[in-house]
Image (cartoon, rainbow, N blue to C red):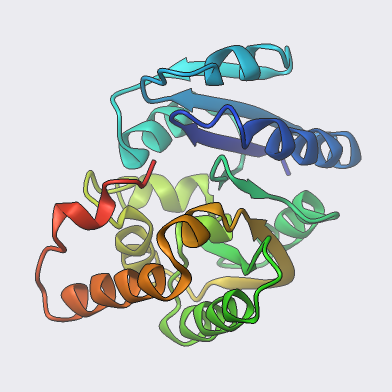
Length: 227
């Protein structure tokens, strides 16, 4: 079961080394995988950081996670596509768990439980709420390392070219099959939540979800620092 890891990035020179270190560990353990990193026009040293890892294929695409991930998926050769944010790290055994889930009859998509890197209790509480919501709504946030069967990804047309592309894709995929919600947890850097303010950041997430529930487009300002 070949896994293609697609990492979209934009000005993530600080986060990428740790993310790629964990990817390299998983690649050694699993064996049958490839890593494709897709730049959205970085102005820092991100491309050089990725290029220092010769086992990573580097592509460029139009800025925007959806466009970048679609470009990576188009170049991928795996049976399963793992979409990994540049500031999110994989737990030990991640690729083996994905491969096992993908072998189940009718598999379409799945994701991991989430946690933040910070120790603040509010971050742990927010992750717990994210995990609860995802289990019941059958949708994953992008920082939960969403993975999708190649056939299912093609069947729904890939990521919609819009904001909140992760939820939009899951809403299409859940019509095909229930998701695989793995017991392992990926870890996302808490820097953005801490920089903006934990409660303010959480409030923004809730506002986006309310807009989606009401069928309204969330304000573009909500995505100013999302990359």
